[in-house]
Length: 508
Image (cartoon, rainbow, N blue to C red; front, side):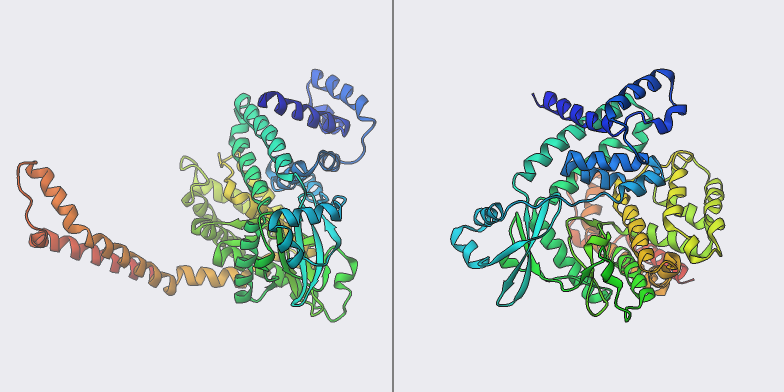
């Protein structure tokens, strides 16, 4: 029965896409075989003459289909390597705004979460909704401790998402099963990533944890302001934070204050994002204008932490060295980083890949800021994924999407913003710390700790080794004799010498 329901939902989605001329569109008529042209013409008869670019039509279709599809479109906007820059730019403008649900349903959600008595005590005067998105809406509430923002999930959203995601997963499995070419793009893994991210957004306790973590990081870096979580008024379907005074960046008045330094503000957004991503491996992964508020003091405040991106040390080094390599025009090193991270198969040529990277970096070198786009560079970089057998890594999807998003926001504030120049202080400092004397010292320290831990286990290892040579009948000598043989001391000295050599080499 689950399969039947999935296919019925996919048929509904297909009908909506057909009405908006997304399936076999006229734009690609000349590239299609004759049967596909005929089928596309028939579908367009039912479409009623949809207008606009393919990406615009797709965005409108997804908005009509509901929350799960809106989120899907936002994730598809992270794949310019698949859909092209024009389509992904149109998808990135998807409106995550819907009519609000009633105050009666909002009060019922509070009672369900906290109980009647606690809900009346904690939320005595809940104001009307001030913003309504696909998954939740936000109310303002006055308290003795100041104004609060109360976010409440839409009724029944969890079940709706589960059903729609089940259909999407079935479609991904079908596509990957019948198309060998699609497997390079990992539709199943990509859909699983989308599904996991969407379902995490339906537990507002997770968003509260992300908001609290981002607040700690922002206090250290100083680039962003993040509202404090009101833990007493937060649960699985309700999140309460301090109210942020200011104007969303989507509003024309946000930058109307003549005292605002647009250049510094744009730099803060770029450097704040990179500081979080590279220094800590944690970043706000939905930094569009609606989630950025300009305070009366001209500072940047972030809200809505439903999607938090995380990358490990390997990805952080990859990001830093890629940016640093393009800044320094060291294309060989950029190529080597791709191979070291395992993103390009070892059967490919480092020199050939460096040559391809040079064709990306050199055309933008020395150009005016308004002509230097990180989005364009990333798009061209992904154009080579097929040529060099480079598979997309799901853990980099949010990072790539957010970098393009951040550049767009910063350019909206300062049209002359150069994300490469803005990133240099952050990336350069991290590279020097990680690969200079300080990084070498940490490497040596880490290696020493690892060797010390291994040496503690050396008697046990030697016992097992000698037991395997002597056989089960030979009694094991006491552990205190394990360091007696000369080769044990020789091995220890050799290990320490190698560590010292590695440290000297790193410093050099």
